[in-house]
Amino acid sequence: MKTVITIIRWIVGLLFIFSGLIKANDPLGLSYKMLEFFEAWGIHFLDDYTLFFSLFMNVCEVLAGVAIIIGWQIKFFSWFLLVLIIFFTFLTAYVLFSGKIKECGCFGDCIPLSGINTFAKDAALLLLIVVIFFNPEKTTSLFSARIASTILFVTFAATISVQFYVLEYLPFLDCLPYKKGNNILNEMKAPVGAVPDSFAITFKYKKNNQIVEFGQNNFPADFDSTYEYVDRFDKLVHKGNATPAITDFSLRTTDGADSTNFILHQNKKYILLFVRDFGNMKEWKKDFEGVVLSANKKNIPIYLITSDADKATVLFKNVPVLKCDATVIKTAARANPTYFIMEQALILNKIGFANIKLVNDFIDNQK
Image (cartoon, rainbow, N blue to C red; front, top):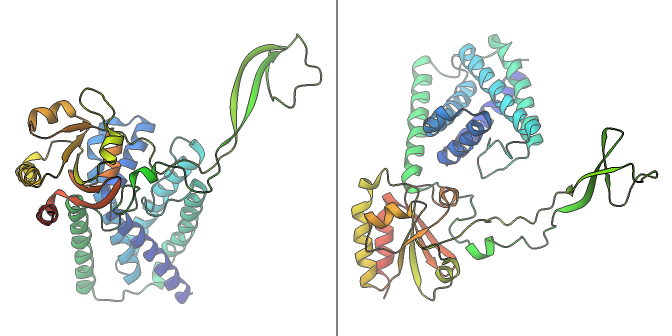
């Protein structure tokens, strides 16, 4: 039995470590997913704390995974894991049965799972953790208290450091459609061989004070004037996979003119700066102004992309400003702001604001 418990501990621990690290790679992504839940539940007073919750949750997962593997403080951490998995199972059940949220984000954007798969995964983990919880005496710590606490402290420090690093330098692993090497225009097309959604016309009638629905090919045998028309609508019969990876990318001038095609079809390399908001402007404004001067000297077009175009035009009078949907910017630019080095619609490079040297190196290398 002790061997079985050890195997279970390793399975549970590795899954929690992996789950925590894959989300620590992109803590903003998890914070946006939390916003979806808060929106669905109407808990708006927590909106400003989602990034903190995300950072904290990822650390908790990794710490709990490491602790359960090395077997330190098994009673506490089995309790802790049980509480976590019950909470996660509730979230995945809500995603599965409410239909209000598409995915739970359990493994971030890199490994999207369907509602049923995530729920099944959490249900299986719940059973495994219950086994650990009721058999604490069958676990012996692999290390002394001093070594174990040191391991957990290093784990905590490393996980926190990784998350703060990617918030400025961008995620190590970019799993989003705006990643380096992607062509934005190609990502706006349906995948090759994709199957579109299939719909059927459905009619709604009233008969004998009851609402009845039927398709265009199966009218009731007794259909006559006693049926009172109510409505007709298209009913989804089969969900296809023809939705492009990018569906809402648009760049507009401050006057509202659509400049997307013009920008993405330029015959020279250019720079886009995606700015989510200007709250941390002191950290990057001076560097950006230097980039603008250098780019102008080399005749490299540079544009500032933001949802708050009015504010941007006041702050930066010598840079063309283009408006873009805030959700698009959140997806495209995890660091605030993020530089895109572009060649037509191809993303040659993505660079977080803290890595400004790479932007300057690109400009210096242009003839």
